[in-house]
Length: 362
Image (cartoon, rainbow, N blue to C red; front, side, top):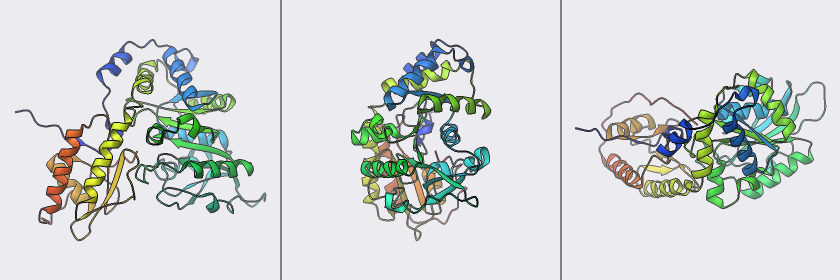
């Protein structure tokens, strides 16, 4: 008897390459990318730069590396970056700014991940031999821990204008920037024009198996290429994996709207269930974060019961659970997940305890 596959909503990084994507990868022309001779990587970098409205782009193995290259190209040891307290750069990259580049991080608590310029205006440190040098402002769009929220465009504009007026540089962690594009109709290049550098990820909602890119001015990307070698990100015949990312850019952006529709359906169902509560006021894109009533159970236990029933979601805290829709989850599977959620909420609490699932907060 064939076992039904679980409905895996832990992350959009769990997508499998499609048949057409696998074919593109198998047939990709390749060369040595450290020598700058891989034609597929070159094509990917050119298309990424074009879509983001930047002079150049650099293909790297991961979003963490792309963000940390952004930090390193803008800052020297002893500098400081400002970011929102819940952002990926601060929470999920092992303090990479300080470990890899000697850069301090100053966090500001946002409203569901959203900062406003008036929260930042007093944070630029004056020139003093005793102080770190405020150098960089980092934003994240869409905001992962904010439940996939799209940053308000006017806030992005005002923060970046203010930063540049202060002589600061700006970096966007746009791991899911194309989700923001599809959700708002604002092109990725229009979001990106406010930032000196932009990181985008191909292995989340776009469904490629490997890789991210950093885009920006040609001189900064040349410097980032040098730092990529230091960080261990120089790859040889990388066209095999770059072809997956290239296919994703060419074919998978518009279809993100399906993931958003699935997430909104899931979010609306959760809103109607006693014992569960959405952690965000709206579901903007493909991430749904909800809270379990502590009188019912806790997040790890509830996620364990979901797993037993064939639905995989990720505990984020003692009471919060995250679900992420993606191209490998169908509408029928979302409807089935909703049914299972409802069944579990109405089951008597059994008092069982489950070991939390392995976390991957990307």
